[in-house]
Length: 281
Image 1 (cartoon, rainbow, N blue to C red):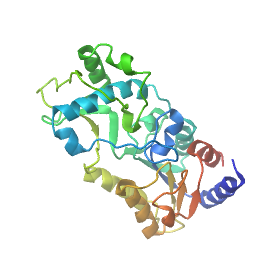
Image 2 (image 1 turned 180 degrees about the vertical axis):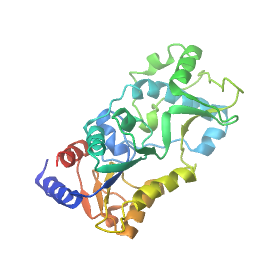
Image 3 (image 1 turned 30 degrees about the vertical axis):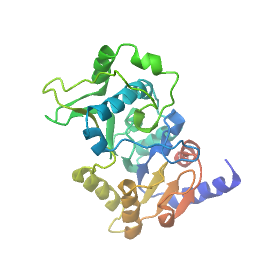
Image 4 (image 1 turned 90 degrees about the vertical axis):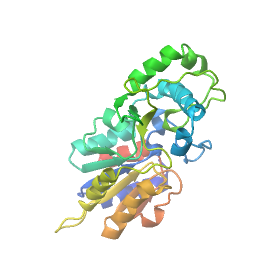
């Protein structure tokens, strides 16, 4: 840990001492688990499929599911890293009262978190856009493997992983899609695509977590942001809410974030290292 990061960590420890916390996490938290992020230093340029593109026709869905089929074979084996475990330790100690994650990888739950809101859903869940039936991604993976024998294995070593569990395939010709087993409708991962809105009840629950950091007496709690550039409004709105309420904000992230102006303390460092240090105090 560099001297500058160490000083910032010391400031964060002093600020957070004795305060109840709510966490807000992003893709930068999962990079140490082998899952790339969108905007971190050195991250390759990524252009995720939008919801309108996904709905545009079979060719777009074939591209999505072929890439996802290869990527999921890798992502499902990802394990929580030291950053996930540190936040889970803070929850067990009663310091972290709630967690909002923008990630769809399910690693917070795997690390033992209980009070977590998965703002954008989970890749482990699938939904039919026609009958709204929900299913298991593992079962869909099995069906796709039966329809496309050897496809994931043939491409597994030659392509790079991308954020949100897909892989960078150039050709998806011949890949066969799986439809809803009940109505034959279009299957989609039960996550919020770019161009979709987070369900309002989920947003309200997250706002309530932040609002709960302001007690009638005594000093407020704090919002701890880890691994998010806060580039999109989806996560930034909670930082702005905390700032308006007078709740201190600590941001742990490599590089600039859109919420830096609202941060009481900014730690420009890696999540695993810094969160482990915070959990030990």
